[in-house]
Image 1 (cartoon, helix red, strand yellow):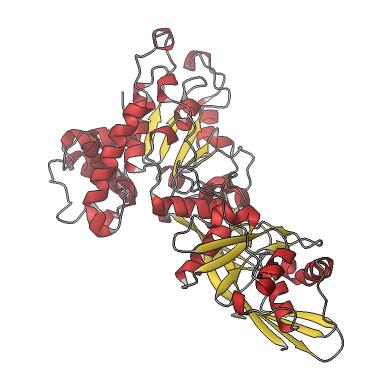
Image 2: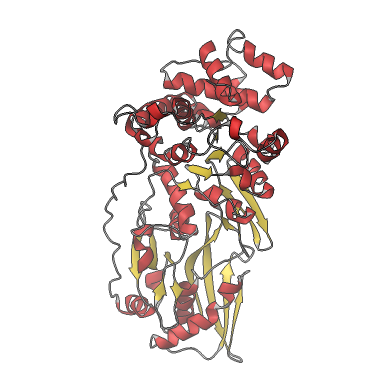
Length: 506
């Protein structure tokens, strides 16, 4: 037999596509040709596979070998095709009967000694195989726990090419994936650690309940960073669908913790202010990899000292904040990553940031305006909650333990509010108030009475509030009503939402 075929999976972004790895061996000068839009890493597979086959005790066929990856129009990236190429090549040369691999997806990178090494993105690859109707997969032993997360797929693992050959030739059992043991959620920072700042705590609770973006402005030591780091502690755990999305993104980035379990806690990303545009939104040679905004999907993206970030990096966040996804186009192909994250900005009022207040500030009014002006109007227009924090007083800092609510208490209210919103917007396919399109909120049955929105409409007509800001205030009003257990916002809810939006709350 001079022809063989083995199944594999290729990734474009987070989307997997079933790929048929074909091997044809013909008479002629010995050579290996790979077709089907392979990238550089895949072109180099011929050398890795040759060394692995020989060092595993198998005979390398001295013939003209053509390897084709179908569909040929789909770009192929990475080294996950190595093991499938080796199996197809040995099957085409007559060394292996490939009947045991019929309808089986084979994934793995080969070392020169025949070792099968783990690869990135196994979880979305196995999910794509399951969606395509494939019920069996073979993965590297280092990815077995991760692959076993996908229900309805029989996962087996290999640690070297020799084990795969023995399975195909003699029926030697492969390695079973380890039994999944739920990892205990580690205790993170607690809201009880924050001294005072009732306004900041209320803003954080509203943001968590509705999925709203937050800007915290105030002097050093006011608690901006402490509040932002504690936002994940009051967010609900991720459900199965969201956990799969988040875990798949971290799998592609190679950031999954040992054990390969689903990530249940909302992720928290806090890039340094020197971060580049590609590191924030995604980039890299060939196919762009996910950036911080996608790694924070269903979680929190915190930009501390936000005015110190480059203007290009900040402006690049505008589109994903609005659409919940980031579309990246590179020479190697385009891809779309989800990016439905909560953005938290923290900023000092001026460059000198004297903690003792305006009386000791060394900055002129022009310098202050220029400093905060680095946060552009269009970016801030997408930030729902914008509050100014005052310095912490001695009585608040030295208050006895137990005077402030812990994260668990706030998280319970947030979970109840989110459930109410999810039930209300289920017909629209939305989970949180922040995800609801503005036109739905402005039309019956969700349109609020004129007396409730009178002040809001006045601000819109005067130009102090944009149409986008109008919709975001309405969304926050629904969130405040959910937190207070009401089925519709009233006048006080809209007023509080306006205060949180404009920073006028006291």
